[in-house]
Image (tube, rainbow, N blue to C red):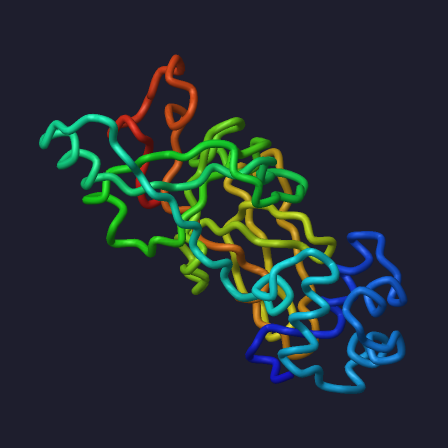
Length: 247
């Protein structure tokens, strides 16, 4: 499988071991010989897309995750009980953004899953210039203060993974955990993860796999953050009331 697809055998192995699955168990569910799984993980053979799909299904992960592609956007259909024309017009000016369970760490990396807790409805005028592949998640930790405070909610554009020095990204580490940091590409093999709160947190470093792009590790760019997204009783310290856009 070409490296520009984002797939490496080592990535398959990390995902498999992260789910505590043996090669034999994956092979049995995927209808593939266990030796073939071993050869794919070692890079001895290039798997077909069909084989990768069966392997992904057997591990209950998406093919996009296995290939390190941006996840597909999640559909949400709004239906209003009210027949009021102004209500329908107002609803048309909002876009739905899923809030997934788990925390994303501004500190030590943690795993974020894709189980949807609730939906945010954010102003289309402000957010439509980004992609519609947005997801919201709570921040845990203080390494990115003052931009991202502990227990705030960040909106991540999962289609925006091009590294720029002024942006904050959600990025996965080698163990599959997810953290938020500024990202600096040091060379073809090494990436620096830079905290904002440099007085209390140290810079971290990632070593990429041979032929791997840093974009394969990035989940998306943080485009907005706020405290008032979910908890209506929390005072919004920033303007507009839904948080600070373009972090």
